[in-house]
Length: 255
Image (tube, rainbow, N blue to C red; front, side, top):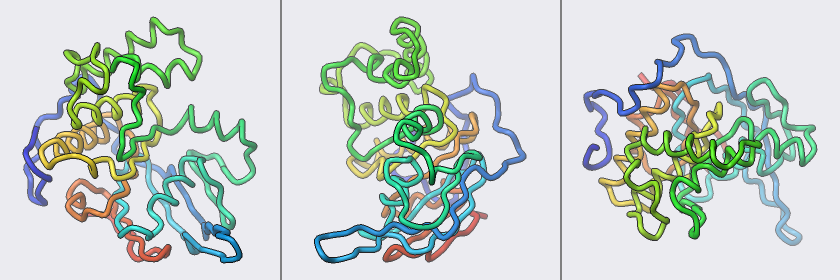
């Protein structure tokens, strides 16, 4: 793994996920937002977290969403993941409009399409690494034993086979976040949403997690949307989205 945040002119090296076939070279839109707005009520005060956000994201993109605290990054990811609902505008993901879905339909949409990685890994402390990774498969109806086999294969692909029987407290911060990443992708979602995924890690561990995310994007074609305040993630991006005070400041393809 690399040491430190990846520089802009870094040389790409062989991916650790060699068992996967390359992503399709012909991406297509997977996310479309049209005048997306989210307003919260705080007592008698109305707070607008996002203002009329219009944006299209192509399939297999690696999107870095930049902005300071309070810029709307987490609100955007919550809307994309169906955790929150917009108060205005249209939200379409993988050809599915999320606006009119009932709660149980949103739950199924998340299970079938979205993987999540958070700043704090949210692993179940009493479960081993492989058991944590197996949870999304079990939620989809897979039996526990084959789910564990699939989870162990995913951990091996991310270089954690030797830690599959360890509980979170027995893992380093970087290892915990790699387990969380394995959990996010084990069910082969179309999109992974990552909210400050390296914010709680040292630079070396952060670089390792970012390298794996980039490899998963290139080798498997998983669309990543990564929210961060750290502009050092720009070199990984195929698209950069910058938010300021809930408004779109920049949306550009990386060169």
